[in-house]
Image 1: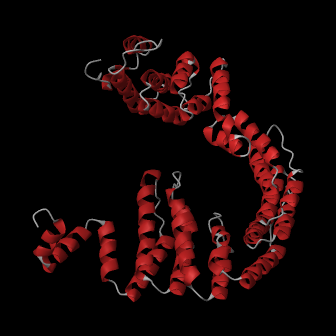
Image 2: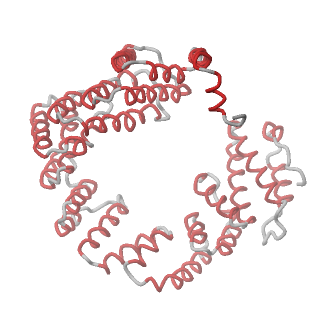
Image 3: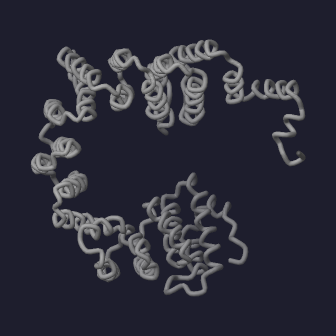
Length: 453
């Protein structure tokens, strides 16, 4: 019992725990919400939810960027309260829609640069609505409510309800009725923006119901119907509906400029030829993708439709091409790691040290971590040096904490390296760094060398 927190709390008795819970709820919103969920009757929970929804619509308090995560947590907690308290699916569906209708008031007073508040509406609220609506048997009522809510969609959030319609309506007649109602609304639309919004919903429903003819018709009607993006969308829907021949015909009209959407077109062509059983065309297209950007995933796709026995021979040829190339590509370095050529990857990084651009923070940090994990420490040092130099070059003191972390990492790696493999030693690199960036006082004032370096 001594090491069992639950048993010790039970031993305190209900009155002590109740007093502690109430006291904690006075200073913690999450605890207060939990207390309400545990003690409210279903009717009380609905009243409290409605009151909070009304409060969201009335509030004029501006939420700054640094407060957005707290605001998102409050909104998510409100949805959790609804889910925990309301078990009637049709009632829950209505209340979830009521929450969706707070979007304009909420976004109108928030700096949601982080997107965290928007995500509550796009994902949490939509998912809760769908879960309720699936269980509600009144499908015509759901359709009417969704159409009502989607009439006013200034932030493009509510249309996501339409994108999931097939999941919760689960009825072809109701879905087709929804399409007819939306088409009628499009004909009566007062401006092009409203019309395009309604036709987007029609397109979404056409795709969900497998009506490729209607999807193509509306896509061409909404402007840019002959654009490469439109041709790709139309071809994809025909393929989804089992007509690969027509999909290939529609895609042939997709002619891009300067490689625009070429990757998307190639991926769709691979799927179409796969459906048609054209393995050679698939192989040629997979090889084209591999040539554009080497990766083990794309190589394996090529081998799946060609000859898997060629894998090692291809890797050997590609390794030679990469090492002979005077240019540098972080994707090529990553490819060498993926295929197990870690020594080659390290040689490649060291030989191209002047070309490694630390501004490409994401890919380089990922590769550096991989090299470190594989004990290729000189290669990892090349990348951490590039990341550090990029920060110092930009000379923004707000980023210096990251730079100090990279320099500490380099200090630690240096203690483990016995063979620098032609790379300048850490001591020499740090000496040059201190000379070149000696005027960056705020950086050096915070930096303390790792012991032993």
